[in-house]
Amino acid sequence: MSRAGPVIETDGVTKRYGDVRAVDGLSLTVERGETYGFLGPNGAGKSTTIGLVLDYLRPTSGTVRVFGRDPQTDAVEVRDRVGVLPDRFGLYEDRSACQHVAFVAETKRTNDDPETLLERVGLGDAVDDDAGDFSSGMEQRLALAMALVGEPDLLVLDEPFSGLDPHGVRRVRDIVHEENERGATVFFSSHVLGQVELVCDRIGVLHEGRLVAEGTLDELRDRATLPDDATIEDVFVELTDARIDDGGESR
Image (cartoon, rainbow, N blue to C red; front, side, top):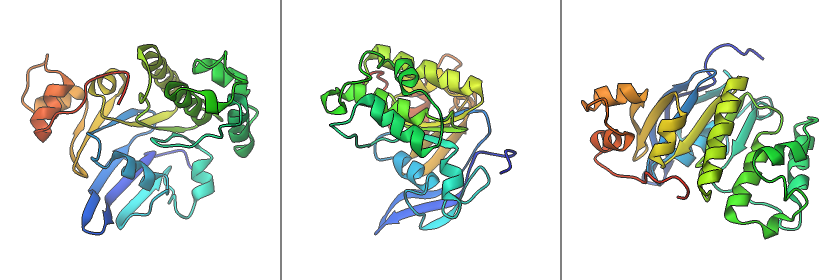
């Protein structure tokens, strides 16, 4: 499989549910090796877009390419190279953290050490604990460890800061930087403005299913005709006429 060209490309993608357009004519490109932040309030269409990219959902119209492949027809080839932290996920309450990560490693045919990955996300003291006893923050860390299995070429994180305390948020930021330095492309959605600003090379602003702006933070400031010291919250308000959460540790 070719490793040249963009990692994610969508062209005019629309997803309808009856008369509702969850995603409306979305065209975006995520380049290899960048950290791309997908910013918007709850209900903007971020999770739907991720579902379309990963072929969890099928577009009503438009095309999606991941690594230059169609995720519908080349699902195995694409998913073997992708690590995913979904916005909503289920865990086996009677299985340990170690068993969860080991299962993903077996599925991806890798020799990753589950305990090493769990230590990395801050669950080193809970490797043998059942997931049913975990807090929401611990569940989020476990799901992140599962996403890291196999050193994926593309790491997709949907609201990765959900349920985390400030220490957990910092750890996720560090992991995003580490994965990007390793060579992974990182695509993550968030409605937490401050974290997007700290992590991303480029930002796409989604509002009511439409990509209303895209670029670096400086480029978005210029588009919004705001001063250099304007915050990302100022930029978002100017571009969308809406306000969203600027917190760090929870939804």
